[in-house]
Length: 322
Ligand SMILES: Nc1ncnc2c1ncn2[C@@H]1O[C@H](COP(=O)(O)OP(=O)(O)OP(=O)(O)O)[C@@H](O)[C@H]1O
Image 1 (cartoon, rainbow, N blue to C red):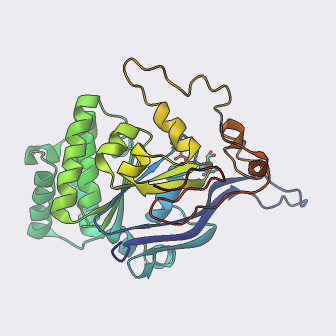
Image 2 (spheres, protein in one colour; image 1 turned 90 degrees about the vertical axis):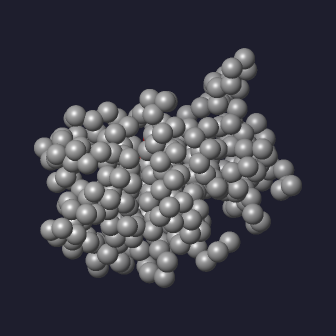
């Protein structure tokens, strides 16, 4: 792999915890636990897993919207966490976020012009004719007519609003764009247009994407590699083709089996125990074992770590890589 653009090293994020004034322990949620992964420049890394597994928490840390409790994140050769504290604008010029709900993520009282001018002025120091030229360029990049600049978010369809969200993210010309379920709120027909646009922009502008989704068919289409998260941890990571053709973790297999295929009975919904473990009381050993068809005694006591190679998995019973 080329020198990584992003290096996540042993990152954990705990919410809550600590003690009351009377020294009673407060409950803590271990949202992200000891995650290490790299993202190469120009790569699209998908993060998949069911609701509550820590995808958004991890993503938010990559743009400084949240900070790790432990571990380090590097963006190029800078310490992202330190940079986010020292100079949030410098971090925002390099890493941007596209939110799931496009209309809710745009200020309803501002025109699109005002929404896009803010980062161009504040982050890029553009004024006057230079700012206007960049505004026009951003609108062209997301295939929206310049007349739309003077409209308000509620006047847009979901797909158009997401184009504005993408234009706002591109405004400071970032290297990394975190896409948090960017098409899941859109109609299926519009999803394809937005995904094509993201693909074109990535090629044209040399972007790197972290793509969060629970829609595996979208992930299969757009991602180069995929990290599968379960209960705050990465349990499998590898090239998208390997993950889909030869999943090694039983949880990944369960996710793939749950994708609706016409004429096939879903495999997972018959699994009675489909709840994640209690995040306030994580079980010892492997967090997946209560749902796992391969579980053995050791899984209840020893937590498996990711093994080595281009397609690592954290499972005592996983088949060897092929
Ligand atoms: N600010 C917070 N305070 C307390 N707990 C939180 C906070 N943010 C997230 N959590 C908890 O951390 C865990 C991971 O949440 P996160 O939103 O990262 O998961 P997710 O995989 O992105 O889920 P979804 O797909 O539903 O957005 C969950 O148990 C969630 O309830």
